[in-house]
Image (tube, rainbow over all chains, first blue to last red):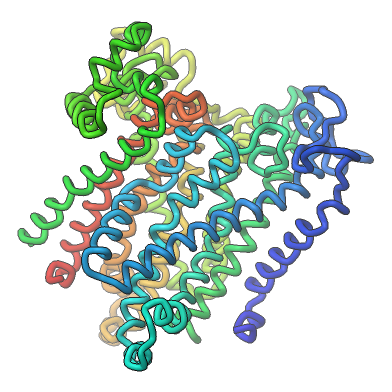
Length: 288
Length: 341
């Protein structure tokens, strides 16, 4: 797999971007040290309460956004937020997907019928819209957005895994394990799941980028992270009033928009490029 | 075909019933007082909230509540939207044409550009146009919708002042209220044409083009990719070689022979694309202050206007279900093998 990955410069670029962001997230306390005695490190420090953004300068290399929020600090710690949101949502929804998918695929019958009809109903809703409804009911906040996104993204994983299990459970080695007297739990976790789960893990990791985009959209419309929280979507929403610039210089406040937008683009691009590479590797028809 | 259609359409009410259960289950998380707005047609009724709760059985057992709720919805009473300052049914009527106009335009643009790019990059595989189209698809899926929208606004509104946000200029809005301008379709561009008022047409076009371009750019990738790979597959088949061998010119071979067959997966995809546009339109409308269903739904979500959110969501879900059904039916029409299953 690594051999195939190595030959494609775009896949390498994707991998490089992801590694870069992992390093930034890990080193956040050193790259952008929070002030002494800060309660929540994710709250961006404000130097003053001046409304107008200031351009990049000594001390604020990316400049400040509306209300003097330091963009550099926000972007560095926003990397952590992005990983936090992406990983939490993907892990939880994959976990629910595994639970529902394996119950459904392994037992079949009315359990399968019931669970799959429930899945169909959730899939009959455009997932973004359903997530909006859930956030509206639960109230705004990044944790609510994560809950909502996990609640709407598990059905496709469940379906995928169910399909895989339906083929795997016909295999001879499953029959053999049963003949040897292995219990349901053992057959499922030791024989079926390890052979059926691989595509699910790939699809899950590929969706990291999309999850982060959607969560950023929630923050952008004011349903996610609160103002001042280190989150890329929230930083872009701060720039919204300033994209028109001043009368003399229409790009006077370009930095308020450019830096967070660029961060989000690179992050998602990295996952998408890596996802493309995985898809090519998994799809034998694409082999040259 | 008939049997397939009946089977597929019979499934529709089942899904809709399931959707109603899901929505109802979600609103059960709210208190009866908060749910009251879902039933009233006038905000003044809310001052006598106990009466509303009694009339609509909000504190009664759950099956009674569900029955009342469903009866009200089927009777067209979707509650009062505080953000729109009108009933949800009226708000849907007021906002939907704008959204539909934007969706249809973006859909047409995506289809036209996507098919063209997909075909041309398959025919000229690994040449510069193929690389350009790959670049467009991969950046399009990596950019969040609101980033594309804001960037376009920054350049074409902030810098050049060509394409302003909103749906129409103040002048046009004044004109729309008068008897001079008749509204036939609710689509500003079409209404302008029917009224032979080209100022309105131009004004509407100036306002709609940036949101439409944003949606096109963000949604085009899948269409390009599928068209390209399906074209490549067809171009490698024997009948294409036969066509070339008998001396047909290259254009006829690619467009008339190969592309007709390559379109089969694209047709299903395009109805799904329409559905995806309906889902993605909310953020675009918000960025451009375009007064449609999605913008209203998101504002409602921010301000705890639950009836507004549910109005937006139910409409989206309804269109989504219809779109998916249409996709299946279309697929069965173009590919007879599907019907047999």
